[in-house]
Length: 170
Image (cartoon, rainbow, N blue to C red; front, side):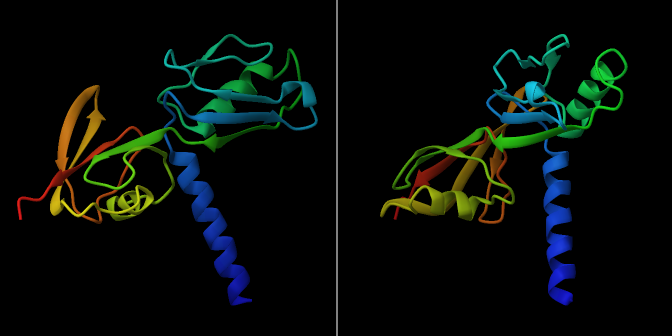
């Protein structure tokens, strides 16, 4: 019984985290309307930020959550097209984060929930022999401006972050 409660809590908290995620360019989403096979759309959000959905005008998706997109599509389909549309929006693939500098496999990697800097370093194959064990910086866009963050292993990584692992002097 405890296991079932734990499992329910885990699933609920995962769904809650996914619901609060703010969409951006590069995220891949799936939109489905229950019992309407023609209204199933899989799309990657382009740099323009717009997504297309049948019977509706293009939707500006950047900056919205999946809940908000569900609401927009539900309202758009309600009445004229369907009596009570059951809309679901899910994230198929998150936009990437980037890591470069003194790691074994620098590059872009798909974002994952609960990603911290130590996990990002592990995804990139770990440190090279010359890597600093403490001089790490993250460039993050906040309010359309780049911000440099001095990071540690517990720093949370977000999509579009650029991680720089500096070279050690010793």
